[in-house]
Length: 351
Image 1 (cartoon, one colour):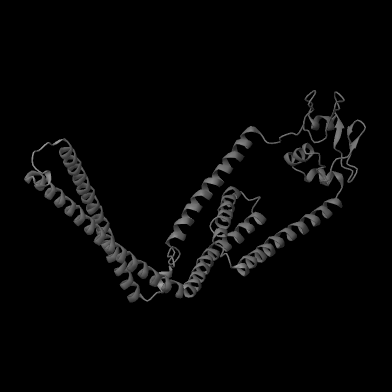
Image 2 (cartoon, rainbow, N blue to C red):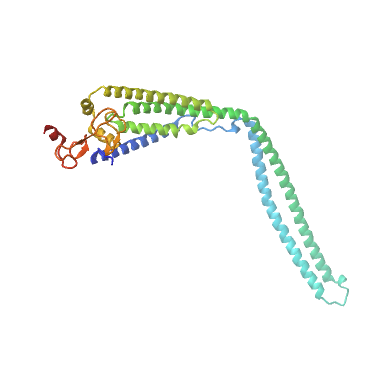
């Protein structure tokens, strides 16, 4: 069972410091977003229409707008004419059906073909048929106008598309330069932050103001991976690999340097006596390493025996477990008091 060497207030302070780090990082991220948003040229887009002759494009756009209005008005006129034709046909059909029923039931002593009322009704039906035909011709004329307008609009759209295709290569170059410029601006802002964050991690982890430095590190990582990486040009492989190589060299430098310092420190510690090494250890650090199954002196795994972990480290000889002088309980040699009887280690030595 591992032991937590920190007191309850110390754990609360540690949690509070993490909160301070994240709050500080959030404000830095907000400030960074405001600064990037205000940079000139970052939010300006590049469009293919910017590389078309403006006079020609305006003429074609004006023609398209005019044809769209004509088409819209023509469609409304066609709807009106279609409703009129439907109404005229319905009126004619109703009048024709009424006339045929009237003829079928009518009895007359004279020739029905010479009956004035029959002639009058026939002329009324002919007038309705002529009115319906006029509506049909009106609808056909509107359809012709709509067809011409749509053909002209399609031709204008083809001309504009040809202009855009001609400007495509120039547009692609301009877009590449715009993306590269945006990436360069973001890189110029984020790379120094990342380097400074790496220096903080390497040099300031034991500093009193490490929670603030840690907040800056969180901010720098966010700026790099969120504000920079998504803006890497899709075809900017050289830029991507260059940034990766530079970052690898910087991180590798600090890692190698830290490893050399660690190995030099371990070599220096190995030359000390056990009492010197024990005296240099902090109480909390020793308990933490022991709880993790690691020797506090040489940081190697504690070897086990038939009855549990060895009393002495088999690698450096440091005493890891001893017995209480009062109750003979086997205990952690770094405990300041016996867990069974509460006798202090200092009183045991004095006795």
